[in-house]
Length: 183
Image (cartoon, rainbow, N blue to C red; front, side):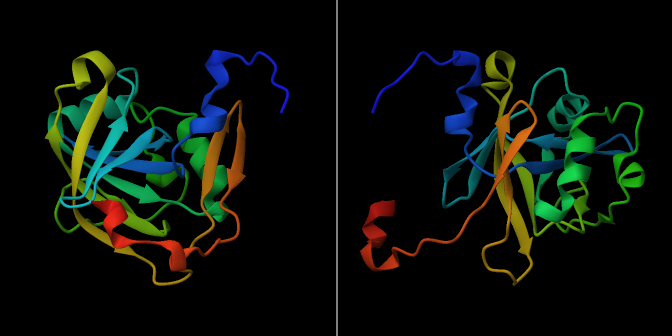
């Protein structure tokens, strides 16, 4: 396979870890949502998730102060709203109102969940040592809710430069899976 030089600033096209999510936050009586693609599952039990939230985002300080958030997994019908959320600031916009999204109560945290999203994960901050240097927060998922169908929803993933790909067909290799692979 022949290779050509590739701009280092665009490598996210190959490595973007998972679906675009909406991060819900609550601080001092205000709610916010932000669009986020920089996240990673760190551990299964307890369920730990890492989020890179740029210090320039309004959500950064809200999450830093409240020490909690929700991670909401949208599906393809919400893509235009998700892009719109990413293109405005919660400092001067109520994104739930502007994008006509349902502000759903969470059960374990004050941060709101998004009713239209396929899954809602409620998270508490467990590690912030990398926040000063990398803006990297580690959360424990303390509660989760998901729609029972479809089992594998059509999520979307960011390539960069305003381009997305959608989750494709499920490829089943469960016959090859060994539970010990997780240890």
